[in-house]
Length: 348
Ligand code: PMV
Image (cartoon, rainbow, N blue to C red; front, top):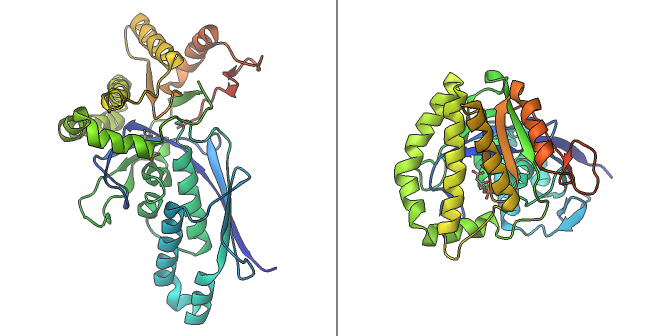
């Protein structure tokens, strides 16, 4: 059997200014712009292989070795968009007949993550950005791909770029300007580290899609956040990154996380993503910062109980020893395991 095949790896990104709430469900257009940090793909990552052959009888997809329904509308949207761009880009180059043939062939897609999925660790961001990168490579599509990744899961558009990334909410009703762009490169702030503490590997109880819909419909806090708070915080965070001002960065980061979870609680019925262990991590960070008489560690939590901590490289050993003192690994795991999973210290 003759086939063309491409494999790509993509990293997760951690939002500092959170995206929560859509103004268009189908085009996945956010209510507010967001800023994230893309972690190194050498640690938490999705790996996706896409194969194309005229001998495949139907399109099939496997996620972590379990076959999924390929009729998922988000997956179909991505396939359609990539093929449409391929048609425009490569039409003349490949010749009409060949081009049309290839676009009608079926795909086999195989994706795996090396960390828990749906546990608030940005697995969908890594997964969809990886799929888009692999498909674009296969069909020789060039240019910005963040608008296509966005159609898989909003936050996926930010994983198309490394370093510090802003996803602009955009203003066009067709979503053509709701794109991600790098605001500072990977090596801009080399001392910054991310520490991921896995509190639970369980999938989240309320998906981000449903959670966002409920928040948009019921939370009054969300409305004032979008209108008054986010625009100011975006400007402040951009400045803190440009100036490498960790204290300023840390304060915005923790306030953003707290406000996001306050909105989840303001949603009716309320959504509680954090657990007692998450609260203990928050308390430990504040106690540590108070003892140091300055902000040395910042936490942020997405739609799940798992923590992402940001800190300077020089502070990692000291803070990690505190974490190991207060939080015991489960299942008698090795010393560097907390709750059964490796404590990751990715470069950002
Ligand atoms: O892209 P989604 O649908 O998985 O939503 C992501 C939402 C948060 O992770 C909570 C925030 C963000 O900006 O990534």
